[in-house]
Length: 252
Image (cartoon, rainbow, N blue to C red; front, side, top):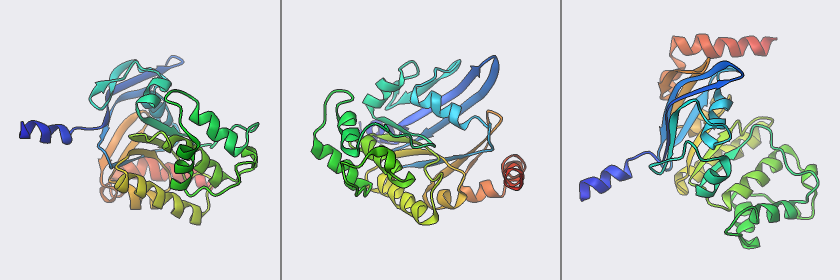
């Protein structure tokens, strides 16, 4: 009994196996596998067009894969849609923090609280806002918020539901260095203090250097390397596929 319990505690919280995806007649993902445990942060990097966002579409349930499977807490959720996974505890953020322009901050929280049962109270919203240090007037139109506060608002709406895993797509995009530091501290708090598993797509290596327990590199829909960031940075294949193409884009 003790051995069984130990084995279960070491099992991945969230995983995918041999994910393959075709879109528009093109093969997008070619046998992607990954796993994360509670409190673990997995970073994903790769050049534009590598398939990172497409992978998140599959992991979150917005798109069903051609083959392979996604599991959460040991349960096969491959065919479950996004809203069903969200109710189970799978949260996702997007590269562009799109907020409901017609709603105030308070109305946005209310819509999130009442998005599905069990309905939450305003105290849950206050809990989410405090976690991310969102200190804005609730009568403020969401559309007027700056990028960082938009990210905080959307993240607070997720966190008040207490997700077990977060899929974060470039959370540092559009932020200045001091704001990236704030994202850094927030992610570390969520993973190390709240035991939330996090899979993060991010181009800013300096952020992954401080928060990621491991890194996976994608190129052309495949995993070309995985391991510690230090080992990744020394891999010739990674330099050729990612860093050289990234440098070329920066010079363009």
